[in-house]
Structure formats: structure tokens, C-alpha cells
Image (cartoon, rainbow, N blue to C red; front, side, top):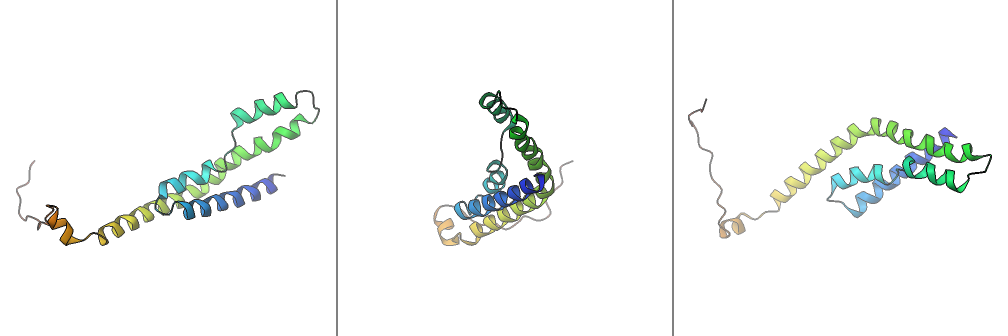
Length: 127
């Protein structure tokens, strides 16, 4: 059962990732947050709800077990994919930033009062 949940979790995370990349191509932080939030089930709300719905059912343990496996599995998978997602967000933000500078028109900048200045050399150091 745990292996099946792991497969479902990975498939849902991949689906969430691809969907968010398609829907929000210029929001890498939103994509990163969404991969975890779209697949998260809350134990704080889920377990009391299951206990209320199936109070007298002898199989109550089997109803709560998937939720008890899912939440830690989300944390464990997050530990492994978080560094890669962090690098992705940094790369995407750099790409978006460079594209915004590439698309800027120097003629419009000069008309709006922005002037590109040369760096000043040999400034005294303040200690």
C-alpha cells in the first residue's frame, strides 16, 4: 500500500508541476510552492473528519492509514526534490530577469529620463 501511495504521490506531483508550468510560466516561485500544496492532504482536518464519519466502523484504522502514510511521504519526497526545485527557481528567475533586460529599449529609457552611466573608477574607500 505504501508503494502504491508513493507512485500516486509522484504522479500527482509531476502533474501539478507540469500544470503549474503551463498555467504560470513566469512565476517560478508559485510553481515551486504549488508542487507541494497541490498534493498535500492535511492530517489536522482529515483524521478528525474520518473519526467522525466512521466512528463505529471496525475498519477505522484502514481508513486513516493512507492519510498517515501520505503526509510523511510528502515530507520525505520534499527533502529529496527541494534542492532541485530551488535551483530551478533560481535559474528561471535569472532567465526572466535577463529576458526583461534584453527586451528593454535603450531609446525608450533615454526618453523617460533614464541614462546609462559609465562606472566611476578609483573612488576612495570608506573604512
